[in-house]
Length: 116
Image: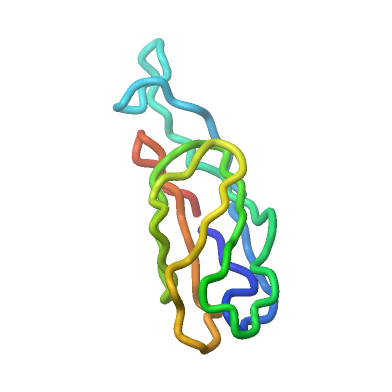
């Protein structure tokens, strides 16, 4: 899980995961040779929300070590539901003016491993 920095009127504070990662080749997470991917995607903040005060549709950039589906929480949502391996920029759905200091996102890879 990664905390979203600078969302709406929030001042910066973020966290990122420290899991290792590996890419998968099969839909079931089989990396070939019969071994199943057991490592979660690793997320890191690339660029916090710019000018968070009164920004009702902020963009946020993060990186992921694996592609997968994005889940959101803490009052923030986006139309984007898939993360690529590498840098990803999302734009949040319109937010009401307030502090969003509990926003977070996770990425779950094809093997079902969720970032912390």
